[in-house]
Image (cartoon, rainbow, N blue to C red; front, side):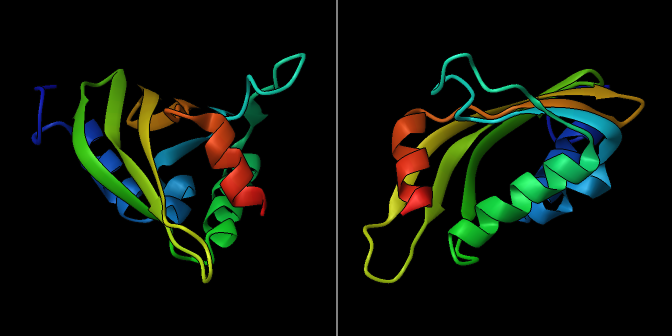
Length: 133
């Protein structure tokens, strides 16, 4: 596959980042998802396994923002094996300061489906705290 917008991986990631609830549409049934807060506990949090767990995780993220989650994508690149998405995760809630955290989503693909995803936030502690309150 070519780099840039002609890549099927890039097209899938653009589609997903418009609405994270679409994760089950672009992922394999046995996807592994490594949450952004994975290293905030000892031992590190295990990856989520399977599409049901990944879907529940993304749905919970959206719900924690009151449906106001915006993945403000700045760039996407990929090939048939990997995809990388850079941007700023933004959310607002009544009476709260706006959340704006840079992120880097790293994806691994097989046969046109996401099989592994690493969530990376510039400050996972701030993200976790904002989502929990």
